[in-house]
Length: 282
Image (cartoon, rainbow, N blue to C red):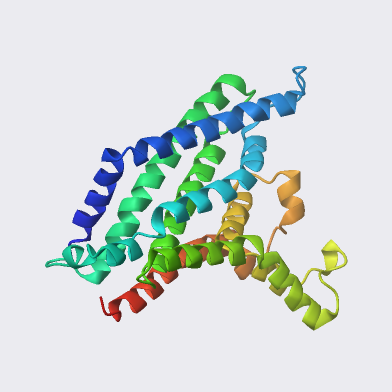
């Protein structure tokens, strides 16, 4: 297999073009900036309120689930389609490279670029946390960091997989945008629509009446699986987490199911992209 050569080339190209440095600067400013802003919000400008790592993690969830998917899709959605459209795919796929090598190499290379940038940003945020917060929960922050990097890599894989389904960069952009809108913007409406068809209302009337299938469907999007995994893998059980998740959930609503959903996205979309790409006439 020659996918490592493709991955190395993608990574080195990003470094030479300054894309790696720009992404790293973006995530350093974002992660460290959010960590500092949280100190201002928590203290209310008067030094009150206890600064804890768990609180920062909760505060980071929403912006992380917006910035990372968008960044990953932007940098990966033309990975294959752009090569085909420009004609460089014929050179890329010359021996010993295969179409599978191209997809795996692009996922690994571009995933490494984004992953490194996210890790550096998280390290700087950890430094801010240690310096300014009342306490630093290293285990909680490390777990959040690992899941955040996984989200970055899986969305890169999704972008590459979607890119492999078309030969045109414009169509690749439309497909990636459609994926984001459906799964990250409109998915709640889809689930509410299913609930309405079955029950005549757009959602459960109380927390105690939420059916398991409703919770499961809401976990389908990658960022939702990520959010649930972060909450459920946090060490200990905060009051908020205990309210959101029962102590003994069914296996398909467990933290391992949330993690499995993330890995499923990491594998399934590139596999579907490869299926289409392998049969395409270049």
